Length: 380
Image (cartoon, rainbow, N blue to C red):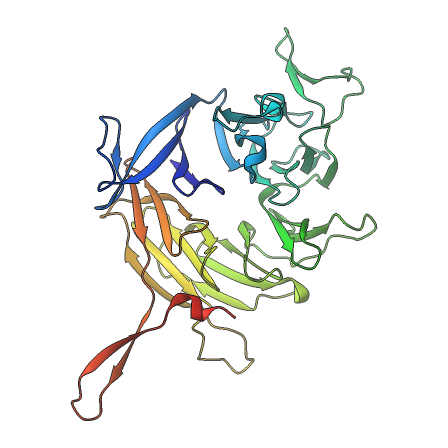
């Protein structure tokens, strides 16, 4: 199961379970009564399905369209490399919604789609990471309005509109990573340029690579590392990304991209997902395989420094799903410290993450009291 909060509707999230892609609406028990299809998320909240669709193929990854201007759209990637725009009708639907609905994109040769990233400022761009196939590029960036679209021929072969079998191309606006395998992707937002024209890719054999689409003459750069999975950008620091491999997590500063600025080694099982908090400075969430524990790695509370003055990742964890192993999680994009979890038993949990509490001991009474610092005071 994979779950993702909507980037523009505070009470809507998408759940991918098997072949079913469903949108849920979240509400409080105190506001209205549940329906037979409602699912309890916490003691205060429940979710009700509002619309569902069956995926046309086996879906390996998905991402929300970052803007409501196009309507409720998601991009889904398949085991064959095909990318489809899936839409859900809503009152704000415009002509552009119907134009994009059910459009397909993909490589000339079938191979699994491992990663998908919809650009959150230039929302006409979608980056796709694929398995290796000979010397073909494995990192493709599509303009969803101008890219050629796949059609399925009678003979069962996939081809592109406007191209013959001898001259067809991927239809991508940009192509990188010839003969490589891409396992993760992340767009990097630049506050100075107010756009996201840089992209970090995790390459299976090469490491992390940073691509600058603003300069066609620039060469990709990055470290050779095994930590190429789950690459994600810090929403409060445009120079900082995180990635992992097995039970090792690295935080990188892309201005000096040769070595990590912080490293954390999990004493538990292999890491399966990481994600920066979008509302709290310097906070990473992480889950490990077959575990119900949610791990918080804090770069903000780093008062202890090593000799080289690199920051330290402080870990705390808690059982977030009543003992059920977590398959995926999603930070709420706007509501502070709120996280949604999906589990191996297909349950979902809406959790509020509490801030770290500092205990202050009174010299006279020798008793302790809590001194909780508001999370918004932790931002730099």
